[in-house]
Length: 430
Image (cartoon, rainbow, N blue to C red; front, side):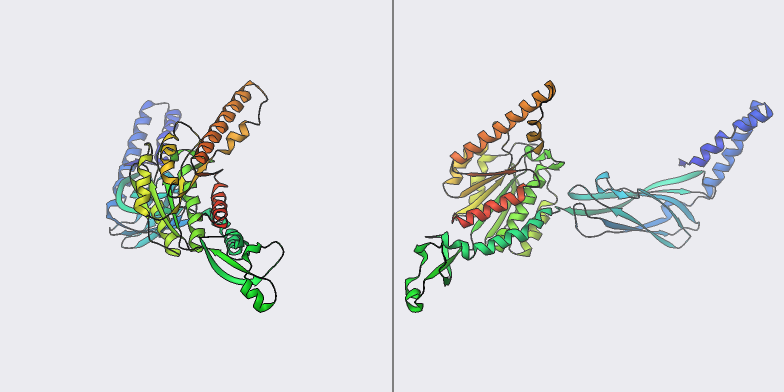
């Protein structure tokens, strides 16, 4: 049973007869009258248990997109139901409106639509629907929570796809004119073209030149079907929020952009999300299927508050491929103590693979180093400088062990990683 605002107002009006008649007994008479009205109203209210509920939900939705959930109410009773309906979505689903009024005559059906704009990735569930059925006077209500399970899968937004066209254009340039700098093993002959000033003279095709009586050079393209293995750290450091975005979400954005780019370049991409066990894995996919499987695997994964087991990474990479590959490690390197495990396994990886470490950095740290107006800001600037020095120390150690490092703010890291991949292709290191 639930009380309405009308009932409270009606009870409060009992002060009027007390003032008018100057007799406390008038209050009891009034309260008795209100009680009779309320009980009668409650008895006339339709039972919420006589309502049959059916939910219609959309398919997977990208983070931040707006979708609609439709709830159908069928009144199987004999009384008209006047109710307030609350669908039990969690706050992260941002259901609007949260409560809706509906009137369902006997033996009829009505529908209500709830807009959902989730701001958290993963599965958003609504386990039940709460019905508050009022009588004709709207004083008291019968209330019941009915189990109607439903869920929507919220996928990573892949906002970094806006950087894909420009990077693909650079790949097309690399696939011809600029790739003449790539020599030795690891190149594929593409075509012949006229010599222009600045071309490498070692690329001149003398036989074709003799036939045409004009200088002709060979153009090359980077080898295709190379392996790219992306390992995303889902340990405790990936739960930190940078610019109101978890580190792991930034890692997912970077992985999606790199996978889309490498797939267009003809390379094979594999994804593993790992901390102490494999949380998600995508292997053997290509083209549009690759991104679909990646976002599907990423969607339900949340950071685990445990340390990353770096000692298992070399064996994990070997289980994915025995060929030489570009191994991208998406993790955090801003704390020297937490990076010891990573540094200890890098020599094993760099002996066989090209290793690239991707890490998101907090842009507010750099802002702190620029503000030194008072003693508080000076201390904060010192802390910011120390954090930057720690990052530089770990980055230098990774490079000394044969790896490479890409860092950036959440919005800058995905395109920076894509640019480094293109640079490696241009240098013939893949």
